Image (cartoon, rainbow, N blue to C red; front, side, top):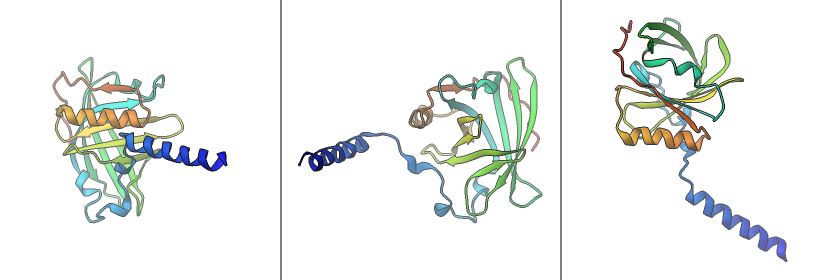
Length: 188
């Protein structure tokens, strides 16, 4: 007699908790909901790296702490099913560091793999902020969220959305990229 009542109580408790949560897991871009004639074309062009988040105590943000700012250009590769991410990173000492990453597109998926890091998975998340994208990078040693925007400055509510998403993912450390120095020239 108590067993069915206890199960019912736990079910109602679970419903109440689910209704109070502010975390939405449906914002991950799904291949089923993407217009393949547009993906990944809508992500081509210039992006600014604005923030990163990771678990408390991890080293996943250390690489970004030397950055003052970073601009990226995303373009199609000469090889089919690849995207090139070209970056120009201004570090705190004022020097510029060019970088290039090649992302491999998976047919029927919005997930990306990084050339040279086959275990690294990059998932794309939409956000309500126009012209923003959130990436989640995971592999054996990395687990972090990255925020990119078409503009170098965001409205407060856009950054708040990134912070909420970070909190929902369990990332308590958030690093805002300072952007106090002039941007480096970006080869496009």
